[in-house]
Length: 556
Image (cartoon, rainbow, N blue to C red; front, side):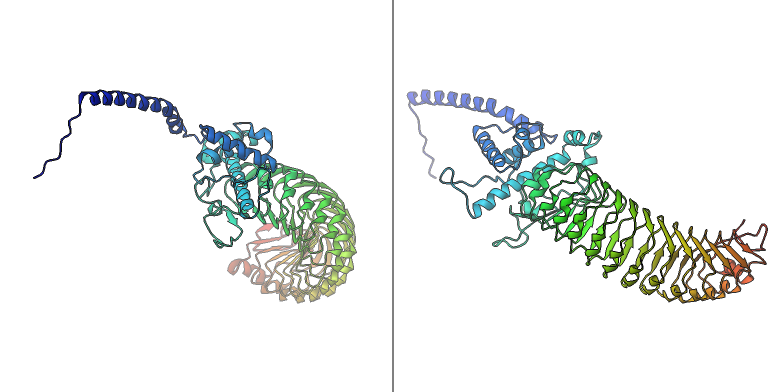
């Protein structure tokens, strides 16, 4: 076997080696002293704070990106100087902790403009930064506490329901809720950073206020859907930067203040839903500039003042939801020019004046809610040509006069709700032609006369509430033909005679109120049979004085 050669060094070389080893130990010690604080900082960084970028290279990169962000007005300078702001934390994360290592594209000549993919890369960086701002704005406990003026007892209380991909090395196109525009090289779904088309974080337990960066960095976004979260604060004028936006869903949050007066700049908007918030003030007149709008949902807020006349410019509008606000003044007749409308809901405001006759031009209308206002005058006969109308509700107003027989032409109507007005006269015989009608509510008016026997034609009727009027005479025996009837409320009128035996034919009845009338005799046995064998569990009559009732659930 061959032995390995053994090399013996002279004494001079041994002395040199000792010196080299000593210097090496000293160098390692110095490195440990320098690196240890950084390691300690990273080990102690368990509370979500962004560690400070240490090296001159990081500082230079931080400042370079910051300058470009300011140049493009993505953020304001003041917030990027504040280490506690979500903007500063987002930029520090981007520079120091983001394993994606995105950076500004290099430009050969100073001051030269970027083109092509370089522009895309720069925009992608701005978007990654803006999403990081949103993250810190809504997940950092101290920031959330300050913005919402609340106490966060447990960080898990404000944790997003789904944060897959966020703040990781994945391209933002794979972050939960983010959909990018298709890429010519990578297709539709890809691990990249590209122009964001949609941000959908609905029902995601997001707390806080929306940072302006969400509106300044996403100039090609078409859908922003943040409904059903815990967002608050106001919407800034920066929203008008999102000129490609087609759908904006912010409903189901706690936003407040006025809508930006320049919202009309979003000229591609098709759906605007800000309902179920705390917005107040006037509806901006510029909303009339949203000429592509199809749905306007602003209900359950505190909007006040008049409905702007500019709303008449929204020719493509299909749904107008302004109910449950504090709107005043007349209903603008110009709404009658929106001939594509299928659904109008203006209920629960303080609107006054007449119902515009121009509504008769809305031939596509299916739903009309005008109830719980202070409307006056008569029901215009022009409503009788709205042949597609399915649901008409005008209760709790100051309407008066006779019901126009033209309403009987609405053969597709299923709900007619006219309670609590000042209507007079009799129920038109022509109403018997309303074969599709399922719900007829006419209580608390001043109707007189007898119920017409033609009522038998309402073969789909399930709910008939005619209480608190001045109807008189006998209940027509033809009422026994309403075989689908479930609720019959005729109390507080002037009906006389015996309740008809034919009521016993109505096997679906669940409630019958006949009290506070002038009936005599007794409640027919056929009606009592409904109590024993079918669904009738609420039968009330004047059985303490005027009428005999062996099966009533309550006697008056």
